[in-house]
Image (cartoon, rainbow, N blue to C red):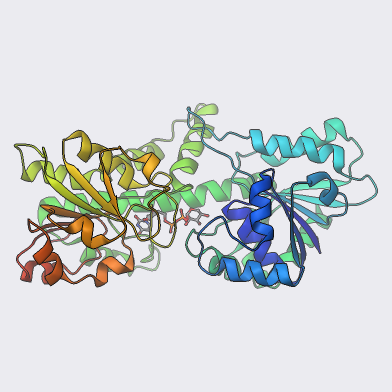
Length: 435
Ligand code: UDX
């Protein structure tokens, strides 16, 4: 099939490369000509495991192309996927202006003598498929189109793997020919029973509800961890016991500094805002956000309680800046808030991340020192905070740490370090809800 994918961000680029790998003829469109040139050379603008080799292979096979010319590519496409950004507006709602602009452009380009499926892949408010259709119909009443919602569930860091191994594919449309075409496109990715067909509105809601549920699960386990802390129970043991119930499942029960990234914070806010538009106050989702905002500052609370005289000139090492391991994404990363708070308290902050340093700098206070080597961040530190659980930090020698640090305090914001091993080296170890 001939596919046009508009937008070469995480969702657009990964989908484009994966559908090309599955034997489709893919054209990825982006307004950013510099990015298009870079992609044509086989260079991925994002760090994602396995993406670049697959990109290069499919460029070589001529199954994927890059262009800034949407109109030309749209003319003879079987499916056009809109995968542009839907950033968060100040009031929490999703900004649809990029999606609308694509719809306007498509309206002029779509031929009348060809059936085209248009897919919203971006996470968009409920009713957006209908809005895209009406924008197109206003300018091009005879366009033979079906606007559908096929939400994307990939995770950053395992985006390629997730795309090839989905739990389910959701196809939102009431139009049979479009549904059949989309089922065919996804047939090699999932068994038929994993393909769920719904109305476009339900598909749009499934995406928000899935992210809201997972985010709430994280805030829930963090709340339980905080109560564990107060009563001397251990969150790892508790999560194991709770997660063994198949109705609950062990996934997304890792307590820590809460969720960051481009999806959970933005999508939960957008759902709250959609509910508010219909005069419904989404109290549980409000709590999900409130717990998460507080949770990320736990390491700062721990230090302030331990040193009530203040953190002035206190040297602190921060390990990990990206919002989670395996990605260079800094969007809504807990490290940003933590470092701002520490610097505000007068601490001398030294941070390290194995992937993201230059991109992090503009988001952090100028007073922070960024290091290419973790050793340099640790050297002379009174306390170390693990913020992102990169593997390299788990493998780091505690004996070396003990020698290079000035103090012996470790705050494990992701509950991934060996607490007993640190204690055996004389460290005061603080986890999140760990006994
Ligand atoms: C998420 C969804 O998983 C994905 O389906 C959707 O398409 C986009 O949003 P992503 O943001 O890439 O994906 O990361 P994910 O691995 O889901 O983690 C999200 C955040 O939750 C991270 O900050 C992570 O550290 C945190 N998290 C996750 C926890 O704190 N505890 C957990 O148990 C799991």
